[in-house]
Length: 333
Image 1: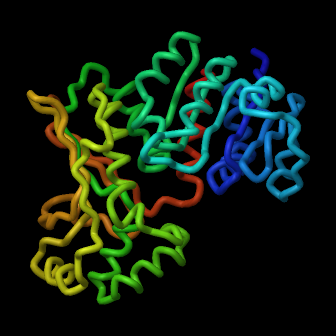
Image 2: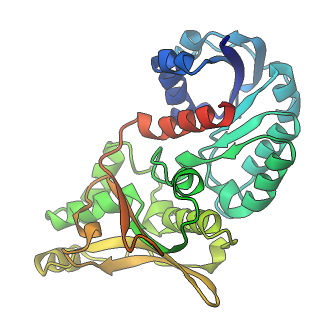
Image 3: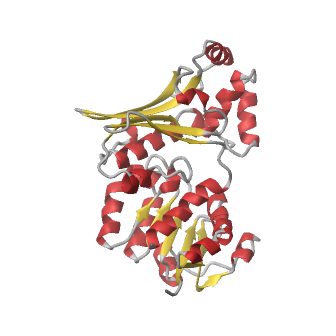
């Protein structure tokens, strides 16, 4: 069977898509063993403009910063000019609207390309419509990298656990707050712990999105919307961050065997789905208590498995990119 070559378009040229290109090169032999070939036919960002070449752009040159001038006027023209088969959407998150990522994904699907995103906004604000639009064109809309990097959470329930009924989940899903709390437990001030997370490249220069629980709330809303198959608006997620916790309170809680974690929870009930994010003291018998640093954990409660946990330990730079790679394989296989 001949190898099928897919034209890939990368929207956003930050760490995620640059690392994804590195991973494509690294895993090229494994992809070809599945009869999957690829070329980078388009790269776009606010700074670069819309760069398209259906014959392929040189990945090595792209990674070295040697990018040609943009030659398309908007996202639809760009996708058509590149003869796109798959869009990889990795623009900045806009938690309150999911735009413009939703429009980017809609444009890809309507021009005949599978859409893969690392952006949580479209899941929270447009999942059902984008899912149905993809199905109407016989295409895939996939988003495994949006929560816990490339860990197969969404595909676990969609493809591996048919007929299972999810009743609830809880977990620790934000690396920045976890690093800060771990540092405070070891005697660092809040400011020193935050700087540690920033120096590690995990916390943003403005960390308020993480500290105040917005990142965790968006992840809870995305997970609940997809896994419970019921829209959970971001406004319905009760949210409290860690900014009011003192070092003294954090260390006393750890000494008492009930360390603080920023815990995400959602549960299906008779009146719908309830969801929240807030600091909680957890017992040392709880798996959440032992997740420190940049690690994450999610714990599912189902009608068959009373407890099913997935832990991601200190994810590296390729973790998010791998989720996109795995979605690429799923989309074209």
